Amino acid sequence: MSKTILIVEDEHILREIIKDYLLEEGYEVLEADDGRKALALFQEHELDLIILDIMLPELDGWSVCKRIRKVSNVPIIMLTARSDEDDTLMGFELGADDYVTKPYSPPILLARAKRLLESRQTREQEDDSLSSNGISIHFPSRTVAVDGENCSLTHTEFEILAYLMKNKGIIITREQLITKIWGYDFVGDDRTVNSHIRNLRSKLGEHAKHIATIVRSGYKFEDKL
Image (cartoon, rainbow, N blue to C red; front, side, top):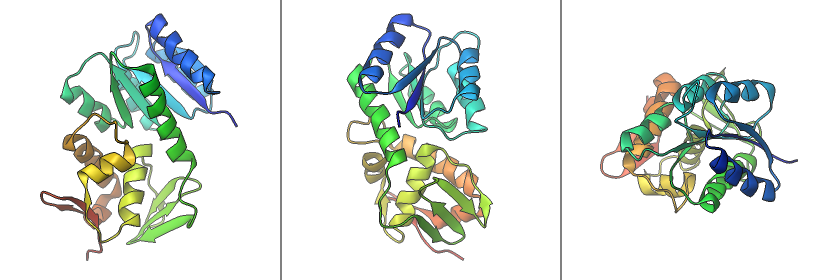
């Protein structure tokens, strides 16, 4: 079944370039040139991915991302002409899954989109679920429950938690997380990982204690009283 991607970009030429690349790969494409139109399309359609520019008319990308994250964990790639590291971190704090700075190569953006869609669709086949210390993951539905209560995670938060739990008791370095979650071509640093871990811990509440920070090494999912 074809995946549906929403492109939110006010620059017509850039939007058309991205659209052409996605259509050639067989994706269904929806378009919006401002933030309010983007939210309207999000409410009207079942989306598999959103490519979201930050500098938009009517409602900026930050606000669009924040509103979507209140009700959905659909993967979001944010686009920006600003290269400030703090802007990147702000996007991740609001729940973005990936971040691409203009000018960018359309094939690289396409590769990022494919990676998010494929990791969302395909999981390791040996188990449908994973549970530990009151945290349960169901891979087919990509849902997480904490003490039986639903815990809404973004695509990236879900992938990080699943990876740490699958490797329970093993120290996972930040570099390993970056390679596993974002891929070898990711341009980012430890602060990116830290930001997602912070968001994940906040959502896990008292169960956040099971994600231990190993100084100068990385993170480890472990049993704690």
